Amino acid sequence: MSQTPNLNNLFQSAQEEGLLSTASFQALNVVDIGAQIQAGLGVSVDDVMASEVVLLTIMPDDSGSIAYSGNTQAVRDGHNAVLDALISSKQKDNILAHNRYLNGYVLYPYCAIEQAVRMDAGNYQPNEGTPLYDQTVVLLGTVLAKSQEFADNGVPVRTITLIITDGADEHSARANAKTVASIVKDMLMAENHIIAAMGIDNGSTNFQDVFREMGIRDEWVITPKNSKNDIRKAFQVFSQSAVRASQGAASFSKTALGGFGSP
Image (cartoon, rainbow, N blue to C red):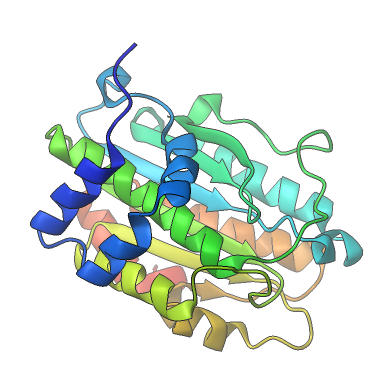
């Protein structure tokens, strides 16, 4: 069993390489956040044989309003459809996936995409709150730590992350939109990360504004209407982007620039 990576060292190394600003480093270098990030790191770099790696990371909303709006099954189906699309892609052997719900439950840490756990009635019953900023910091910290771990081992890595919510932040205790924006900005500067967001219409939240404040680029925000059909379609759009982005460095850059509208 290989040693658990030292988060402090990974973030320090990212900072030394100019990939992490002081503000982002301080936001991530906190003990209880570290424990949560560690829970998502999963498979050891030594056990991954791929010569380059794509990290797919998904944060489904498990707040009560998803169930209240009747969208539970649509979110499960959407997540599972993303897995299916990537498992049937040529790149599947290079893809590692990780799913952490919006309230911090890790459905599966980074693992080969074919080993990713499907969402079903047994593991996804949305009934929690919306700590959007706190958990996005944890999620992006996990993406950063894992990608740095591969980079430190000489393995080229690209990442595609999807954040899903049907409401604005309500329950964050530590982070705010600015904290998230600092980390997002650092990651996007490195040009090997795509950070996308899905805001499921709740009739009152302007998701473009919510995500813009979090530093997420407009072209990577998708806002399906509050219907099963629209939600499934939005997941399909994300799947297509993820498959395109996983097809190599040039394809990744092109997709990253074009957003959801990439040809």
